[in-house]
Length: 206
DNA sequence: ATTAGGATCAACT
DNA sequence: GTTGATCCTAATA
Image (tube, rainbow, N blue to C red; front, side):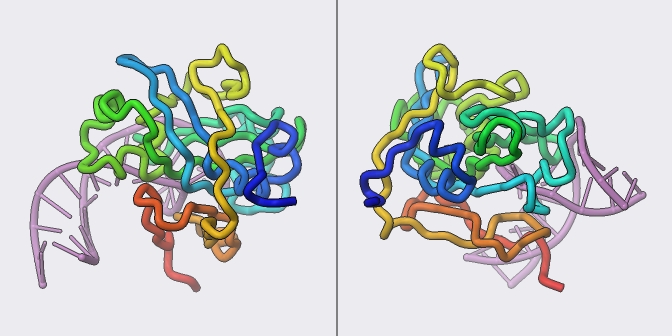
């Protein structure tokens, strides 16, 4: 199968978190926001697989926070971190198996003026959605969007296939800010995109 | 250009 | 009580 023919479907999200993460690069998210519509193109994601990944929120079983990771693919898992920020994932794997892909960064496709309105501290357009909490802020993702079906055309936030990213533009490496399983190269990004966030280890290796 | 501190919720020891 | 799938500001170089 040719990578440049790849398209995203719910079925493909269910296969496994690594191919799902790879296929989510280049996909678009459309959010209906106060002031207008914001469309972004995903350029950086991370895979988390609940069953055997100690860095995944679902690793120690189902809780009130992480239940969406155990549900059907294509739903938003939104969680609150550092007492201040929201981060968003897309659930993967079949219903009953925990897995998700963290949305780390995106480029704004449109509307730039609406996007700037919702990210007033961004010093450049590349910063509008560079980093998972910034992306969540731009799209307005909060608690009430947890478990939202991104494949439902009536949802306020939708996932669309977008233009596939050629295989030679995709890079992989360790996930950002994780201590457990720090060496798994489960972060995927589009090489050269100014919206990709800077990598930093969470702690020095032991 | 790089670094340190603060904000302050929820899961976990 | 500690630490985190983070971001912003202020201080230092």
